[in-house]
Picture 1: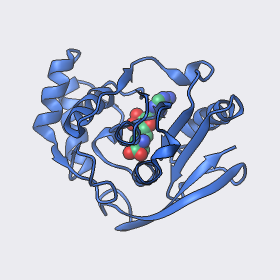
Picture 2: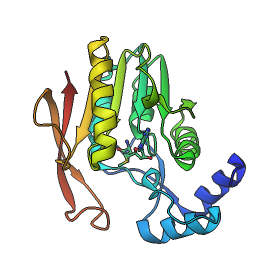
Picture 3: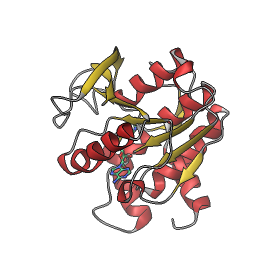
Length: 217
Ligand SMILES: C[S@@+](CC[C@H](N)C(=O)[O-])C[C@H]1O[C@@H](n2cnc3c(N)ncnc32)[C@H](O)[C@@H]1O
């Protein structure tokens, strides 16, 4: 699946375009269950130990950020926006729909980046898809940085949170959507909005997750 056309065919064959419950304006190629898709990904890549297919789900944190941006379009309208750890790209797609001047989406999973392109197309927007590892260098000149559900794992939280704080100290508005994950920091966050997000019980142990959009200071 080194060829993006193969990756796109794989995504189309193994997922269905669905409108996430909190953001029905957006269409995402989504899976019902994580394990069969994860196994299919390993088989297609002929590799063991691949990352789970995070891109095939609209995580609660991302749905909350996307809902906030769609309901408060002035947050992003006319601005340069980055969706970091984009997964399906739903935060960036919401920003583009809300009138952002330019939206970049970044993820380290190549399948995620193909999914972002398909999802953007299905939602009628165009995103700038970044294949480089943005967390490996200082944040660029974004006006707004969106991060949906990045505090579920210590290594990622340790890498992304200082980077988000640096972006904020450079003047960006940084919004983080989080449903109470283990590695959410206890300080340095300002509550902006909250939602009860319908979620798949296959992914979460509940069918609704109370989720907060935080401004990172
Ligand atoms: C739980 S998913 C959230 C996806 C999306 N933001 C949402 O809310 O639905 C976390 C994403 O972070 C990505 N990720 C993990 N480490 C990363 C890194 N170092 N740089 C960029 N993305 C990363 C994963 O590939 C995954 O797509």
